Amino acid sequence: MTLGELGAYVSSHLAKRGIQVVLSGGACVSLYSANLYRSDDLDFIESGSAARKMLKQALGEIGFQESRRYFQHPGTRFFLEFPSGPLAVGREPVKETAEKRYSTGLLRLLSPTDCVKDRLAAYFHWHDLQSLEQAALVCARNPVDLKEVRRWAGNEGMASEYAGISRRLAPKKASPGRPKPAGRRALKNKKTLI
Image (cartoon, rainbow, N blue to C red; front, side, top):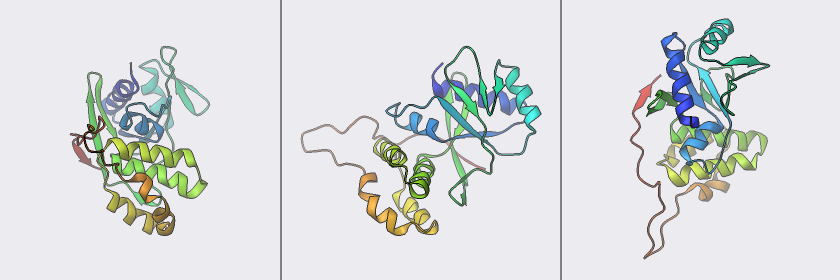
């Protein structure tokens, strides 16, 4: 299974058990960058507050076993993590999520815009250059509302920092006579209100 297929499988199984989750973090970058950035962990944030015991039982039904703070399955290199919620980027709650449908189920995940905010939060607060590069990868291949990202950065107290990096996030214009890079088409993800 691919990362997206596994994410949809896990997410759909948990939903059947009454546990609603949203994919965040590096796995979203992997999906939105067509694996130009690769993540082996899937960070799911719960929309509710299921007890760890319920989560452990539901994941055990599909072969995942808890090992420290992760859940692992012998049939995949990917592992699952469930950081504590609420679902937010920086100090701001996420209001809408995106959805991707796979043959294995439905995956709820951060929108491309919120994925960029999530990566920039790591860059702003921990000076993590890899997170800035990840944000640029998402911007290069997906429609991202950079005005919304700028507004968010200002609310986070990072307006001047954002101004210094905003050109790295702007989509590159194709040169005359050269085709646009693949992946520039708008995503057709259905948005879901949380």
